[in-house]
Length: 270
Length: 256
Image (cartoon, rainbow over all chains, first blue to last red; front, top):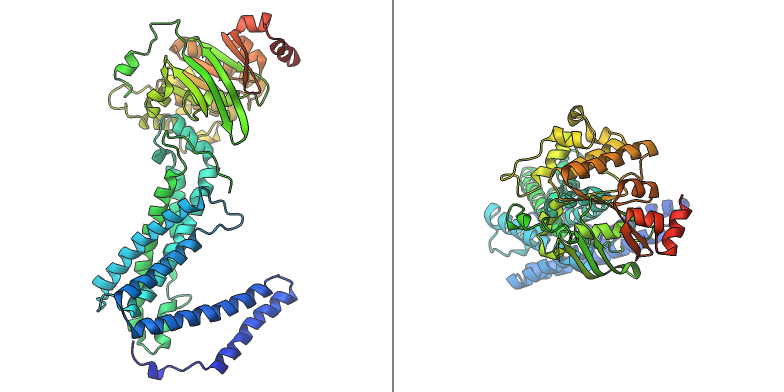
């Protein structure tokens, strides 16, 4: 990652003129009375503040690389992702207490994202020193971002399948089936739903749009072929991490739908 | 689990002991009391009917008998022992449950029946019931085995549900309003099948029904519930000819 020299700078004047593009969205929202104008403005301000904050933190980390500071940053990212994955969305029935879901999603992401990051940075890319924030932080961000979506989709889908297939699940239980067998179909469907984006992502990568990381590297002046290699690593890494996260979330979350006596737990109001 | 001493000590040699006993059973869902301090014996008989207006707690009661639910308070005894003392999976294979609305699994009728066998731990040691014979017992001829289960009519699906429950060779069959979704003629035939099955196979049937004519015709013992409480229980003959409780007489009169 050298060659910042041949990258064009974005000046503050440039940034200001870019905000005109958000104003287009605001204008359309007001014109069609979408009620989204406020959201766009707040979102734009937040994007500005959040990204600059992250930028300064990264600059600090890159200048003062300490392994514990890097791990701390990764922990903060993980916590933020867990919060997002378990946030209740209107109209989406996610059952069980939020704390339970938080524990499940957080642990699943910690395990799968942690393992994937270690594998990629130490065995595939050979990052030295092992904690080099220039690699660990952006890679972890991508892994956790994808795992987060997988976890949220998986949990949401499992809850809705368990609800709509309640009769089938209970019919299995009544025949003496173990909960794992009774919930096999909801589990399968939840896993499929959470993994479809990964499969589709692999199928169209590079065809529709250049992935963010590759775009970034190319804009930063890297050879497209090096960018491609990184992108392949990233695509595989995301598929693996998302699958692992979804599987852990679904199989663990499934348990919360049953009592120890293999009964369907009482429905918790959402 | 099923073939060990448990099955041998079923207590069938003591026909006077109740099949199920409820002792001060209360069932609550949130703030709602569904069953209230219910104490009751269900005898070993061919068909027991649970009757009473909707909301009486009939379904909630039979769900306790194969532990689809556990009561909030009180004890349920099966064969004289606390129902919780049986391994729950083995219990459910001895006490089958047929739901009000049948749920067919994917595949053919035969697939549906074989799944029931495959779920149990006992399949290696006991002979599995023959699909064709079980279908015959519920009044479906062998040709049904290869039909897609989810394309059958409501009445046929309910027969398949019963057949599926029979595949685990249960001692007891719990039926939750098995005929409520069927038209009267189909319901009538299904009921005859249930009575026949109970006689031929020695399966004790406990049946929830809102059709009093069914209870009167099919059952030997009747339990009248209202608002989660026991009104009275007795032989079907006695309940329908000379009920001791005014509410039972009123209920029977109102639905005739």
